[in-house]
Image (cartoon, rainbow, N blue to C red; front, side, top):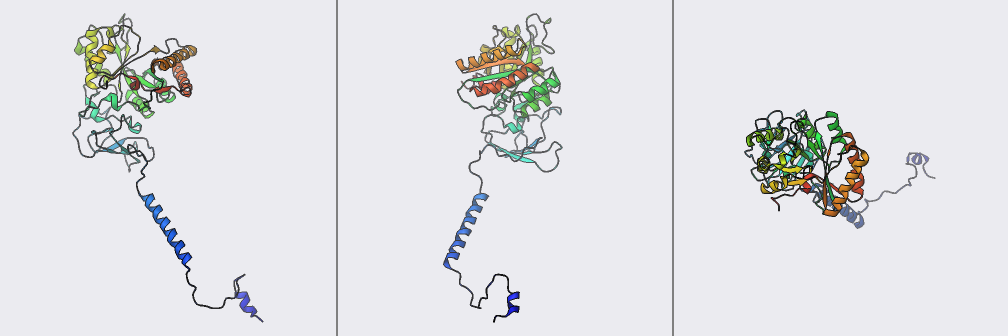
Length: 400
């Protein structure tokens, strides 16, 4: 009879096993173990190596809002620092938002307070065209010089232009393209905020130099992905009864006086690709007045956008002569402030784009215009229309 005491102490379900020598490890177990270790080793190697399919021009970790600290490959002598009111964030080198051609940058995105460790790192390849949208609100110091009234745009020593660097990227496809410029931003604070928030990022925004808080609104617009232009008040017929505003360029002023007023407008903010006229039917038809303006834009690497309101404008010829990228409006979309009328003008733009490849519409930041354009763009994209920034349809004499 089996020993009952021994059975109770034995674990449930286990039979009595007679003592024997240690079992031998089978060849199959050894082989399986080797395979498992090999798989683990290969997986670890893959995990530790650099990912080969990520784009070389940008690696981003998290998306904190704030300033950037740039570490160029080697210290470079840059232009004079920006005035305090318009200054870009402090950097560890002499360049911000861009670099000498061929020098990659490591950009540390920091908190607004500027303290603590970097919140993200963006590795930017300067050989790419245009500006990384993550840092589009940060002026490129190589493209800025100090003026009497504030920072002024200028060509970099390596030849880069504000027109190139601050341009919003687009597909480059040959399909039908529509560029829309909505001007008058910074005049109304609530209207400006609504326009930046509602308008699709592909829509270009124009800032009025007489506006307020332009630097802050520029940053908001660029962070939202918009390309921007600066509007410049030019003399219309019946001036001064019809007055574009402060520091208007006129045909009776000397070239130096007009350049002083132009530079005041240019210094109101940074990070724009060009200028657009505000009024100016008389000024743009006068070669003696318009010539120095175009020469200044060519020297600084800026585009000129003609709103298309005057058939007598000499801007196309003078832009070509001075190497200025040029675009002209095909129609003013909100001359009649009615939703149906605006939609009709936008549909005309679409028809023009399908016929000649592209079309340009000009409007103002009225609530009705902003709402109508925002809804139309969504539907136009579904019909195969690409909405592009104004720089994408500009004729650039330097590129042929």
